[in-house]
Amino acid sequence: MNQDPDKQAKDRSQTWTILRLLEWTTDFFRSRGSESPRLDAEILLAHARSCSRVELYTAFASEPSEEERVAFREMVRRRGDGMPVAQIVGYREFYSLSFRVNEATLIPRPETEHLVIEALDCAARLNRQQNVLHVADVGTGSGAIAVTLAKHIPDAQVVAVDISQKAIEIAQWNAKQHEVDGRVQFLESDLLSEVEEPTQFAMICSNPPYVTEAEYDELAPSVRDFEPRSALVSGPCGTEVIERLFEQCRERLCSGGQLIIELSPMISQACMDLGKETGLFDEMRSIKDLSGHRRLLSMRRESDAP
Image 1 (tube, rainbow, N blue to C red):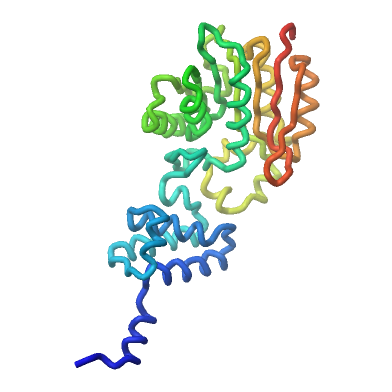
Image 2: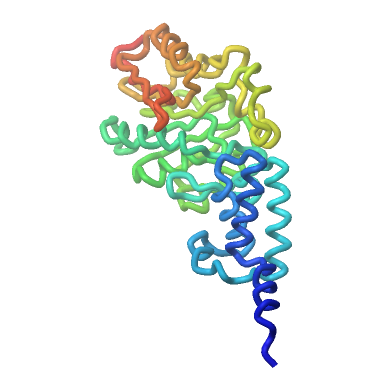
């Protein structure tokens, strides 16, 4: 006997299909203040189903298995409590590469891709020593900058440093996954202090701590509660770590070399002034992000700087 049409319609309305799960979860994340609720929902559901986001779009009418729903439900709960999506799934896409992350590392941001783009542009004109481009990544975290540069600059030899040994371990894993571990050396170091002398670099890149202690208390809980404080906070002014890196450039940045730093727009001018005070650089540029904020300083060392 055929089932009553009204009952069939009712059963369909109660079925948790892929589309219905996405719609409900998007509304839930939006109510919790997510800046990208639909994207968050898609990433988590794709992870629960071990598929790509694109595959979700071809399966909107499908009903996930009980195992997939349980896994998804737990991830939604954690995201609702503020945990970043990248830490829930364990990875983040950066410059079209996938990077493992955890509580020991910052989550790579799209803004940092501007640093990579500037570094790739600068690499084309920098002098090589014995056909090798020597690069330093200071405060490597997950290794996103170091690994991406090694991946896209075939003759680069990269030294990547971080004060956190736990972050170094994650970065080493990422370098191996992307098959550049033979060209990236990882060191636990406070800035460049533990790098063997007299190593000099044609390019030094850094996404250093630049949040002030006062600003830290105002950060979103998803950042403050789940990402390492030491990778965020510089000190009372936000410029302390960057100022120390400027001074290390006297010994570590070669003549004509390039220093590229990501920073907060709020301290951009202060850092520009500090860079001028060193007397090291003959070219200093602020680079804006897509929102029009001054996000990078790119500075070339003078050939005859003291």
